[in-house]
Length: 207
Image (cartoon, rainbow, N blue to C red; front, side):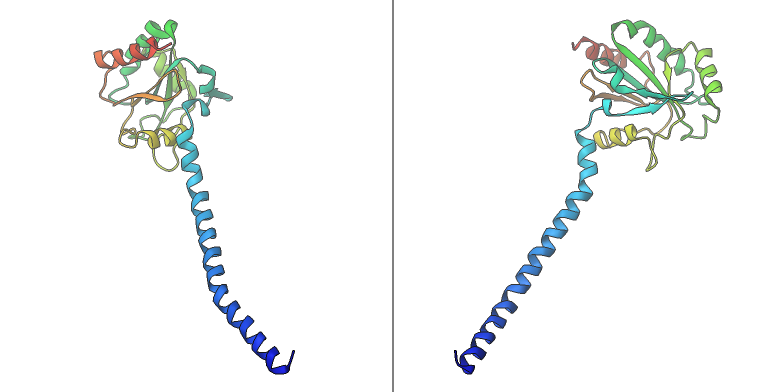
């Protein structure tokens, strides 16, 4: 190959490289951006595929309260407080637990100091308040139920029902036998509310 030919050949290779390189860089950049986006979305997507059985709460005296241990039952999860205008709902919740516990209802109280700092006590004080109102159902350790620091169950529930998150104490999540949220009931919904009781009975009837 003559010197002139070699120079022409080299010039052609350089031109081709300059043409292909931007496309390769663009494709690589797009791939990287896509991978980052997928990684960021993964936790949210993972939460959406979960059921309530994926979560556990710390026990008031240590250990864990695993919702998976109640798989196949109907779970009523309520964030509670000892010094709230709605604390007397403990009595009605205790009555529900006694009336429907034998049919598969599991009531779990989640003490929280998030609203008005109305749950300042420790496990013994919290348990004593519940018992004073005739509530002997399971209580977890005190937990955060709203905001970025919320317990993972409450973050999952907020993703499932973003317009129905706790706004005060005694907010109620009803979990069906399939581990999904079957109903959400506000603080103002009394435990003896006919619509609330009907919702519980509907879920218990699903075998």
